[in-house]
Length: 113
Length: 114
Image (tube, rainbow over all chains, first blue to last red; front, top):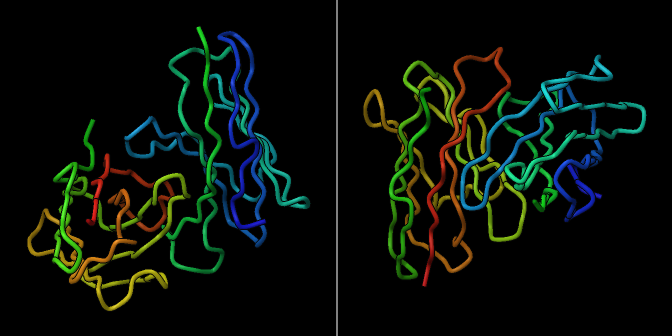
């Protein structure tokens, strides 16, 4: 798989349920970020987790990172219809210039009211 | 809250024509980027720019592409002779300094090459 591959590609849930999205990557990283993209809009940064961290929380978001498996997960608890969007993980270019983020194809989340 | 602004939101052009995509990064930011997203595909890095010069560029960013910061506020991406495969959403992004990994993205310019 390529750097920053998310799965599933699409996820449909009911409002109030939890949504879990996974991301795998191939190379060493300094950090991993999750971004959200509403249809036709730009990406909005959600959360960053550093390579020496295992778990991080921000509101209804919980991110985990397993560097031994080169994988991360994003959990959105108590989902709302407004959470409907595409979610991308992005890894930095370890040792490279900062800002050269490598994105996956994203998970398209649909939360039904 | 300050934001990155991009104009136009949509651009339609004929193959072979030159296009300039414009971006106004957040005012105190020093690092600027262009990314693109072909429909249904992942977001791809094109180029990074700092201190009035290109820091890094991807394989996509060939001789047909150029970037410029013509004044203290604008950051432009020029495609000299557009190809059909250049059709994509182009995103500008910026960040304040080297130590801040979070990027702030604009809403994008949808480029359609006919």
